[in-house]
Length: 357
Ligand code: FE2
Image 1 (cartoon, protein in one colour):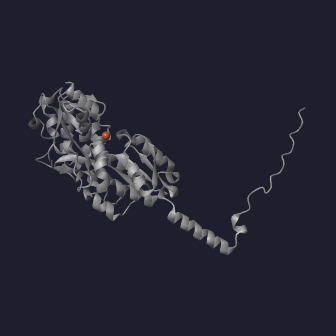
Image 2 (cartoon, rainbow, N blue to C red):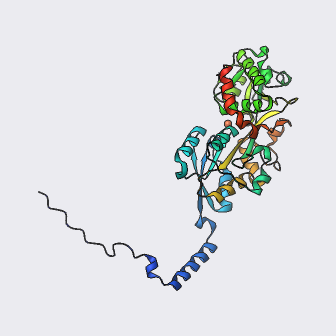
């Protein structure tokens, strides 16, 4: 039989003596004063706070504005990146245990859902209210746009004239039979577009429009970039895309043969939407999360943020990239972003009824 293990020598003291029992009241006061003095003179980085962001903007790549924020404030930003569903489900499942302080996501549709589920807390901030025009933020302050995108009509410069596709409804014209590309109706960008159109017009004309699209036997394409490439390759001639995807393709290839037509300029205007964020309901660093939103929407950060992603700045004091400005001014349906949330579920049902895959 093996010998029983030798008893380990007992460490002494077993635990460090609690500091408070060793300190007199006077020495505690002195220590506290010293700690405060150190905190005041330490560089910001040495007393760094950490802010956790759940983000589905990750497909935009690393965004240097977050480094700028850390340099300026000493607040470190850590990310959990994923697609919107992953980020949303994780935040929901974690409940009050979450380490997320801020949710950043694309499309107001995702922000409406998060707010509706109680995942975002209202924020009142004069800086945010100044930086973000009212149409691009939640009336209850639960989310704020950080950049704007237009969802509009894309067409082949070789085979289509811009006047041929003046409205979303014009894509239902029989002339586009077999020449129309669409992304699926399960995509939140399309759900938000339909919800905004329902908010403007009611369901009946929108359903009629979608039925006409479906009657044109659309080619279904996965992703807006894929849709623009399908138009360039001649698989179809017209479709619907978010503006920044074309900006990115044109940056790589200025001769990319697709352009945007601003939809509904004689009517309510083109559908605009936001990428944006909201402070989480269980944020442990609420003040820092608000500070980050204020920074991202500030004039100082907007040029970099929106420029890199090819979105439009949400802050009206900042000009868009020259390429985007070169596409021409347009009338935007600014009411849609905040108003359409209530119609998102109706939009999904409508697409289903109309046979829009
Ligand atoms: Fe996108």
